[in-house]
Length: 164
Image 1 (cartoon, rainbow, N blue to C red):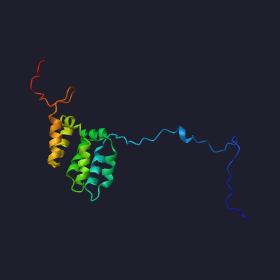
Image 2: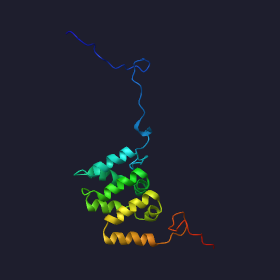
Image 3: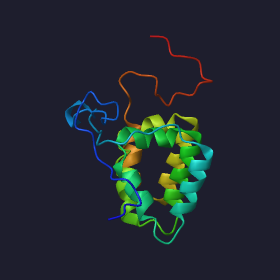
């Protein structure tokens, strides 16, 4: 037999310098989080998502948005580039109404903070313009509730403060 390549053997002696390094056991690796995290939303990423939402089948993008937590969807609505993604969700004819309703329903409890925010109010306007009457009524009833305490209020900043 003529060998063109020398036979490759794995050293069995740990003192051998060519002995393969040991790998850490799988139990020592950090656990993989099942909840995705939302980093900073960039304008280019936002623009890409807006374009993908107007494709014939935006199910991959909608699946990614469904995987986000309610808090992440809220912070997406408050960020300047993310608010444009929400505009595309609400205005795209290729997004099914059922998927749109499910995403809007997950913002329940955050509508007052959206209304009091510069970018969130744009998202809230788009939601109110495109949702059904019962959904609009539930959003308005949530906005009508007075918060007990907190920075979010619908008080006009130009009116003098009420003295207790």
